[in-house]
Image (tube, rainbow, N blue to C red; front, side):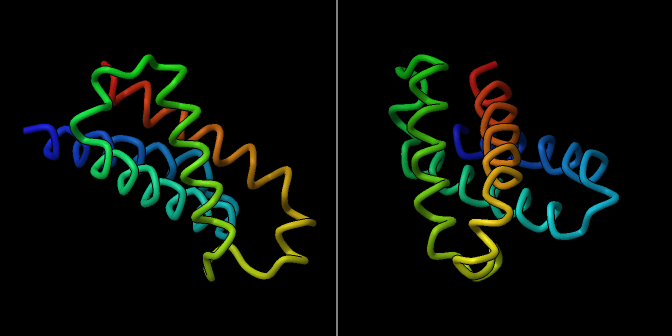
Length: 105
């Protein structure tokens, strides 16, 4: 049941990614990758997410996503990460906030 909710939330956030980042394919790829990591985080923490505060869940999920993105090929090399670091942080924040908000509903 909980895993089904994670998948439903993921689908909902994915549909907003398509509209929000429709003009920039790179940002859309990063956003979708972030969403995949959010989904992984939620599945790993399936039993403890309900007990977390919304703020605590966001913090923990952002930490997980940022660590996962550091080694991810989709996001790119270190130089590109430095150049687009601000954009990536904004995307991560937006995705995680939406994901956690919908997951905690």
